[in-house]
Image (cartoon, rainbow, N blue to C red; front, side, top):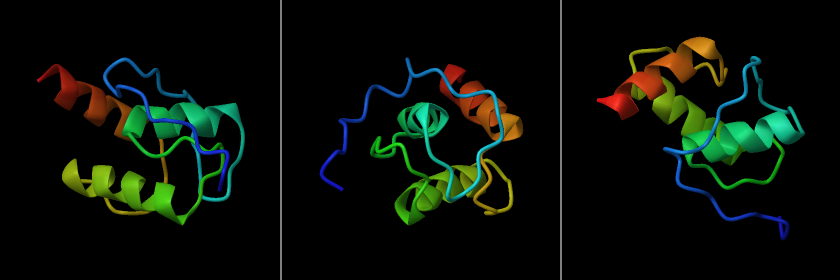
Length: 81
């Protein structure tokens, strides 16, 4: 998509608080994409799912494509190291 925004420093990105599934659209998806380091396009597409599943697998979760609070907590804890 030509409306791709630059990704930000993911350490400073604030994650959305709701559960997000593939096919979702909107500001919460943009916040999720920024938080996980995916291109920020506002639509949960296949490329975003790949990044979500990479994070899920890296943190011992099943690659379901679901972005949820459990994943946020694991990513946040890993970043605090």
